[in-house]
View 1 (cartoon, protein in one colour):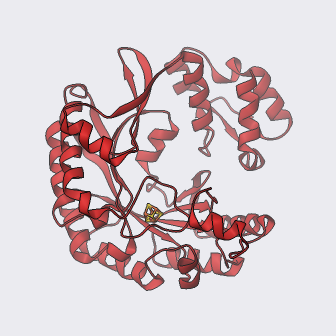
View 2 (cartoon, rainbow, N blue to C red; view 1 turned 60 degrees about the vertical axis):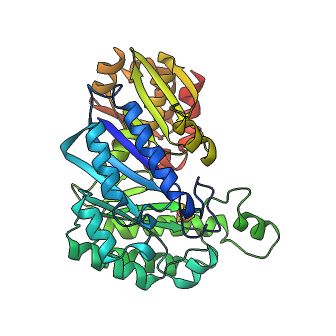
Length: 380
Ligand code: SF4
């Protein structure tokens, strides 16, 4: 599998918890678009023998772009790269800017999966984290998405928000499931240093739920989703059958991807070497360097085989079905259960991991202690 990621770093307003590379600088959109196109054109020769299975336009908020921009971006991507006809093409969207007109543009441009950042269906919780949309905006966005033809829709939700209770957390999931959204990404709020929410919490102006209460919300939420037919296929991701996100599955399979845009990351096999690199996270540098005909790449790193193997385990164990023994052996010429035998047997004894003929995967308890489990593999 090969994935193409395109980053749109603009948002109308910064959310209070967000430390992503995104900012309200829409006046730079035109220059940024020119730079994105230049970057894709520069990568075209390198990618000429590859075909992308997925495209993901993420952010930021891709739906804040000017009318016609997403279509132009995808047209340019199709000119520069080979994108398979059956490719999954996702765009993220904020419910507030996901108008019927905007969604229709995405759909007509070939976007076939929509990812809506809901986070919570409770307006007080949304206000507390600085989201600019309401519960009703989300309902309207889903209705508009369906009207223009989207069937493959994701909703991002969060638990552990200021003022959130188990009841309100379930109420959010109830809305999403009643609207028959087939994919749900459910994350715990992470308090990132340097964000306004971090300062508010540190200064006692905002209280977060107790960590035990947040863990209870998570358990209750996951149980609620299971009862409604959503299969947990990755630590934080749930889907109705056939709606798993192929783009993210490629990341968890440690597959190849090319990132275009500010601070985007790439992993490609180049001349036989597994290689990771990323772009600058400085908007001026990004625009200026591409303007001068240079790729704004930083931190190019050749990954040694042992590290590539560990990465494949680390990412693969995020999936509920775990790491395929056959695929691992095809890629590295050795069986992961044998290669990591001491770690595997210790984790099996603790009840954190199971190995079958086909795969090795973390148990429910192992998933709760994923980092500790990975340390055993790393120590080997
Ligand atoms: S919409 Fe997303 S990317 Fe933009 S500020 Fe909010 S959390 Fe960050």
